[in-house]
Length: 192
Image (cartoon, rainbow, N blue to C red; front, side):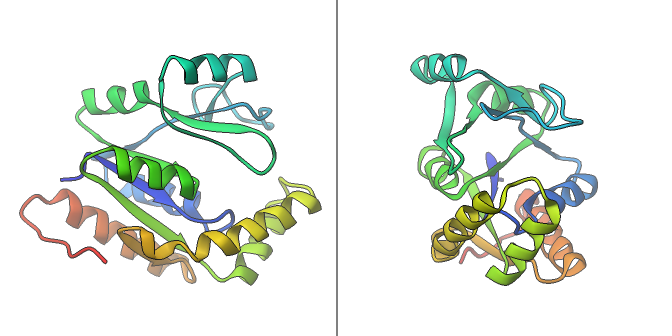
């Protein structure tokens, strides 16, 4: 059984949507709440979508090694996973699920024994369409995210599993079957 599940992929690949569907179907997993220095968006709550930290607080926590992983993203904002989140979820008897940027996912894969990484992929044209529809980034930020997405798509072979999100229902079904198989200690799931 995995100690941690890590879902990654480029912006606009649909990671959040797939994870929401997965959590409803597989109650043994629980999503960690990441920390960030970005501004809170309308409707977001501290401790629900993210732990919203100041730059100084974030850096102090980095200095105290409170983060399993952290990264500075294209916008200049920092994101990270607090070790306390994994401990909280494990104490509840659940498997932590992290939604991370690819660099953070690779760090966790290298640092946490038993971590399983799942890359959510999509065509670049589809990523751009989704980012524009989401309308949470400026045109410049979308361009930066698309450039980064191209690089991230080239990394998909470094992850344990890849799921193409070209059809939501199929992708949700594939992800759910994969995770259920991983959590079934009697099953053997071949890695890529």
